[in-house]
Length: 239
Image (cartoon, rainbow, N blue to C red; front, side, top):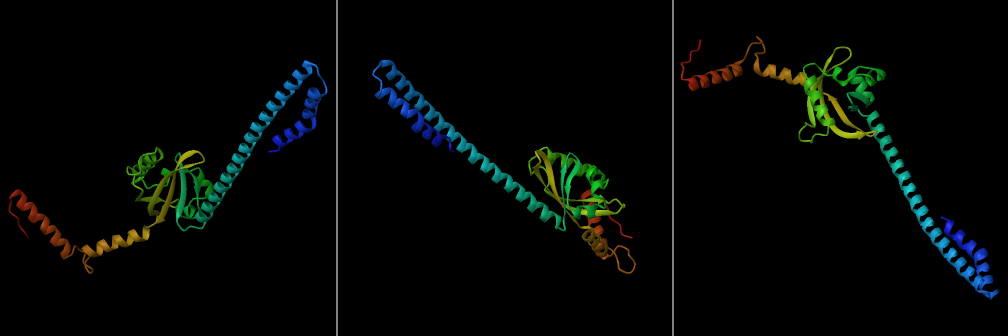
């Protein structure tokens, strides 16, 4: 930023006295020509210094902006890691079938150590009944499929390291992480809720004392059979 003022100082202290000497002290035409050339040289150097000064100032401003962006990104990453570390939900980043980031809640949910999860193919964690479905959705999301083509939230089962089967409420989003496509996942263990829902379904359809189908189930089945009898015009018998 001091290039242009430096050239001005050089011009006033060195070049201008020489030009004045050539014009005022000598009558010969060659000295006048040399004075003109010196003036042109001075103008060209000052113009170049001005342009260089502007270029350097622009580069410095750009560098400061880049530093601000780096600081902002670092602060955002620090904030994300702080929130994820203390979150009760299992949070992870998936890239190329591997977990590149996961929080302590995810380790606890899966039952694997940090080193084991880092080298684990995510499909090994998914219950066999849901492996194909989850893998297909993960592949579609990583390939950049439209958000409407891949459910943002759905449920599936995992198998912990100790063999326990757990139900997960999963929410996923696409992002770029360290320059590559990735999936940001958030899982909540809903096994207790699923167990209660199954118990409620059983209570709604069975007798408390005998554990046999109750009146509600009988009426539902009877309605189905009556409808089938009418549809095919066949007689219906009840024993």
